[in-house]
Image (cartoon, rainbow, N blue to C red; front, side, top):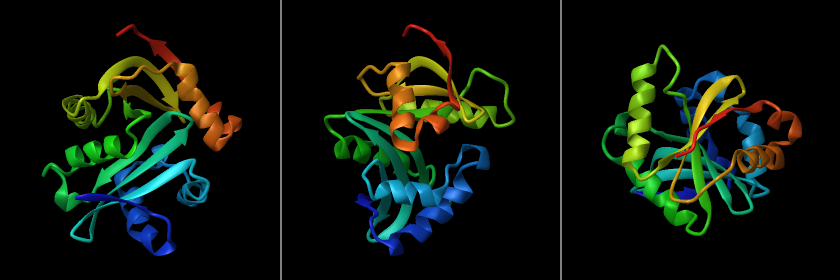
Length: 181
């Protein structure tokens, strides 16, 4: 599997289709806005491919030395086959000198998809991410932050939203709690 940076219009339809089907509406940003930000390198949109066939997407937000894995999804027929773990490794290779982190839906509050949330967290922890102990409310969804070995403050996390999407959107990113890890 390889990771290919999407820069031309013909690369986006499969990405957008998977994006819309893999993430709930309450967690999605405007795809066209992300494509626009992709042109400024504030957002990277990646295609995961195997033998030239689309098998997943990665969308990151970038600011200085920070990279937020905003979205990661594998096509349904390839899930559970190791593609997600390969994608994590490829992302780390793509950003070797940067602090890479991500958000997951909180596992500490009751939810209809509680098992899925716990399974997703276990997947990321198995792939060398660690809990930061930061809980945030992001556009009305409670999230936990995970990172690789490098530290991150809530202020740095908030600033990536402000710098990429503007302070008005960043006002919808609120600190809920910080627990020392």
